Image (tube, rainbow, N blue to C red; front, side, top):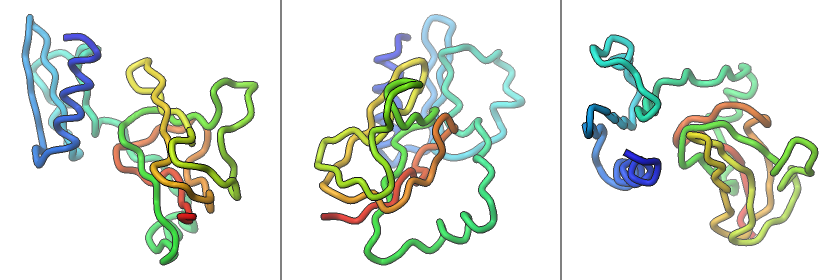
Length: 155
């Protein structure tokens, strides 16, 4: 199975009511799950690079103050959430300026950050014009599917 086929399977799971999907081909097994599970730890099958345990990564530690803030977003703010599991980067390279900062105004389609998943860099773009009110994830931190990345005000 190649990366495009795996991406297509992940998209099917994300866009449907399916909670788990498991596919086996040519001796490789791919299991995609929307929800956390420890079942992959006791799997009788050895893990391969083609498997995607979407819930395998522990949630990043959140300081108590930040946890309280994330549970009660302001009424006029919208959260932009991660469409995948991976590592978030705020700039295209280590020495480059970040795509956005708190207070930046962005247009629809403008790149907000990059999420590296399976050695591929995925640009996350604004779906609507907005102003960045808060950046919720630090550069180089792992992110989970549907984890809030930014709080923005629609403009």
